[in-house]
Length: 480
Image (cartoon, rainbow, N blue to C red; front, side):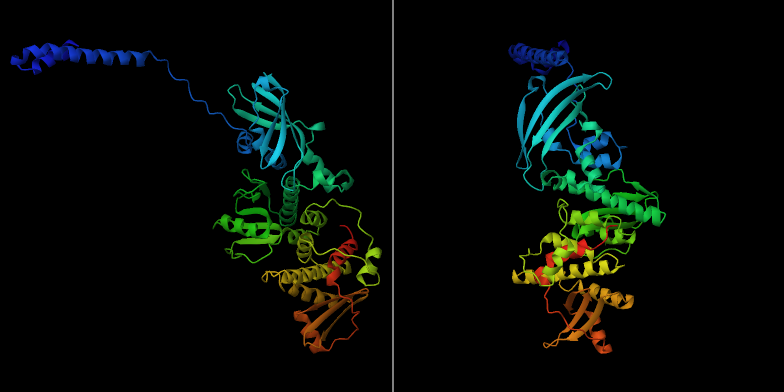
């Protein structure tokens, strides 16, 4: 302070000596004020370190558990994470039920207990979640979860408090693949989360069988694979030069395949359901998209029944009507009200035409599928929609089936063609007593030119009964 005061005096002219004292006091006052603030600042305690509290989310769970098996990751991804993240885990809330709304669905959430686990150094919160669910997108809940947090509130892990150590999705998958369908009810089974889990299970099983057992390529689970979206593949080769992924719909599979393309790898994307209309389908040379039905057919159709259930939006499997009961309706001998073709019928029909044909039962089923698509096309035209990608797209496959049938010489199967009065070339395929007929089939012209043996068409139009026809043909297929 003395130095500053001296400098202040030296800076003032002698003749202003009266003001020198005033300046000196101003400088001293300012310096004192500075020291006061410095003292206050130095006396403050160090600020508490900022703790990064992890939120309750699947991404954080996956980061904490990178080595978990694929099926456990899939089940965890389908937990109601946004709901559980909003639970107020304070002791005062124990046994209190709170309504949490997410995506327009009300969840009744009860914090049942809070326990300190010394061995894990975590607080374990038991949380009961109950919800009726409202539609395909939102499944009902009556589930108990255990949420584990560290002392500072950071999220550690979350697991289902399952009966007998088996979670609901595990029980559903076990019953589904063992055909214990009587255990299901529509409300708990017909759900998007169930469909996603079962679809991923089927894709992984089919691809593993196709690549490891048939082609000798060792596959590994990609560590950052996601059940819902995500850029990573589901499976990859041990060298990383093969990427395998899937999307439920064809267009999404093409999009993922294009984004995943790389010069150092081959990419295969598979899908379950065809996309209804035209979309961008160009792909690089080392990228391919295939139907999971087609790949399953390459391994003997081991999962074709389960794929069909998924394509039909997880209809609860029931005892089908006997084929003998349906046949009189199809032949026009008995009049019964029949339902219209649905989008589930269309998905099943498109998948059916991608299977290999090995028997008369396969031929019958695939021809019935072609009739379904024909009926659906007519319905689309009546509703005023533009021509979609399926208009006549299935007809080359019908031509292949007709050629196959003529070469096999199957019993009670006849193939012939005629030119109608309107100068259309009509192909007929008789399987037992049912006559399938199609126009604009490439093979029909060859049969007419060759002068194939002629038969008389029964005159029964099958398109109005297409849904019943598909059910009848499906029922006559032996289960693999």
